[in-house]
Image 1 (tube, rainbow, N blue to C red):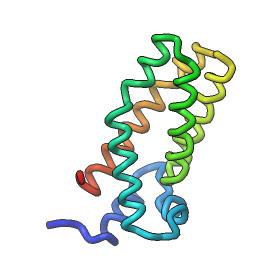
Image 2 (image 1 turned 120 degrees about the horizontal axis):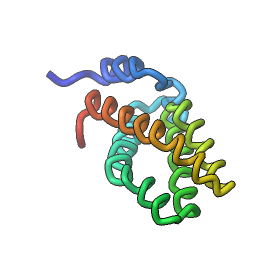
Image 3 (image 1 turned 45 degrees about the vertical axis):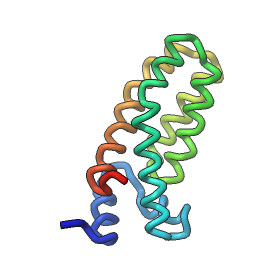
Length: 127
């Protein structure tokens, strides 16, 4: 049996570190729009997850910086504020060409966005 929108919102609120109300405010509390944005986030995470390591390993710090900057904004917009802050740290490391700082913090960031995407997908399903 499919969840109602209210049940989905309640389930999303149970995700640790995920401020659903903040995310809803960014889309003027339009739940269908929020769900669409969340599904786009999940799709992007699935398509770009390995890009972080590829860009660092190939020395493309500028492109890494652009990718992590995009994630910083999208994570903030959906309400993943802690992950957005971690993206900000990675962006700072990239701006300073601090590869050691990136490599020390990237695994936690990647694990965090993967877990968030997994949880969102479990609640909203695919589509």
